[in-house]
Length: 252
Length: 265
Image 1 (spheres, rainbow over the protein chains, first blue to last red):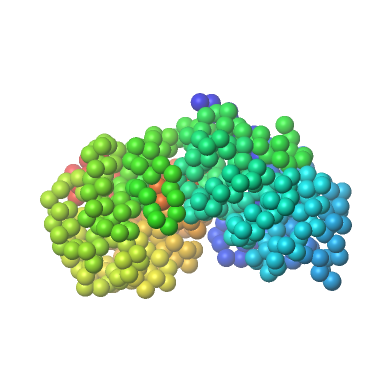
Image 2 (cartoon, rainbow over the protein chains, first blue to last red; image 1 turned 90 degrees about the vertical axis):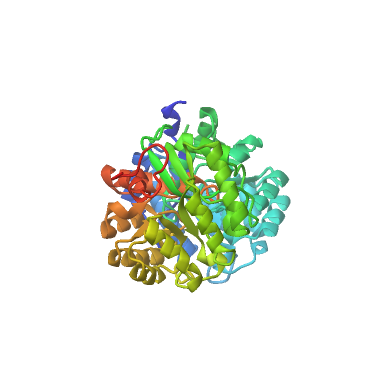
């Protein structure tokens, strides 16, 4: 068992910006840089709190600003999408084109929080699939039947489920065995021995390390993986190699 | 870089055992729990079987004792007292069996307030013996909101009560801190899905590091979730060690935990 395998992980979810109802560590540019230093991380995927809780499309600029500012630290942007709506967003395909030009590595959606049906984003899913950009979504934002529908209709679109909690293994199991394009990250992946259970069932390549800095205490995921029952090679796989395979721009 | 070897010695004062109907728990058995403890540096875990809190206190308490028998140096048991399931019988059983080191109550699950008469025997027993009591606590619950424990502390000042989850929500933590500042007999335990390192720091700052306890709820929730919040929290190393194990060794004096006699005995 080598301590070296606990460095170089890629944090597949950070949310920059203030949270209005939690006492959490800060997530501005300097705080994210300090987070990368403290845990010897190789990079991170950053979305904007403003995109979730204030201005979905406008907030993307805050994610990109962090990504550009910390590009040399391996930080990438994750943009947020909502349905094309007059006055808010002209075109989902144009949004994805702009994201690709900006070096964005993934998209996030919040159907429940933003009040729309996931089917209204079919153009987004198609554009992401074409451009090999993953779709990220919190478990609470999307019903399991809707996830199943998207994963079936867009089988080459990687879908990363986040914030699973500890009560959803029955649903997660069905999603993972039913769709090879469904993944889960470690943000609040809180089921007892859940990580070890997935690995024992040959699903190690579906797990992504992520802390959820900004919405969760990062210590949860750090200790969860470092002191897991996984062997060193699997820790490395979950810590960084899966992200490198899934996200364009993740450094070796 | 955190490394793969935990640097601290840990006592986990809030744990369970076995399956739970609402969701699937992989490997919820005692052997796996001890294997997790080996990885996290946990010397001792004090548990109450899920069956005892969820469905049948008597049968569940027997499951807890079986786990103690299997791992007497690593596991200690709470006796779950359900106010609807012959509480006097289980208190007698607790009194006569040294494998129980404390009492666990879950007023929210059992839908009965901590201030109700059916719990009086619990508080009286605990006060007369020094047996610590761990209770679920939940902000705004009509059964176990943190402020309700102030009435228990007022009436039974010699009873050590651990507020499990410290109220669960950030606002519940604030309410728990306020209660613990008023009554020295109230202790705060840190596990919960909404807990964060800064909230734990607030407990330590406001109550002192001497009455904040590490617990995880495992295998209800993976032990490493709560542990990670404490290990990475903005505490001094002295404060961290108090929370992770030192305070538990002080609290469990009635029947000391495995591995060390209680402080002062």
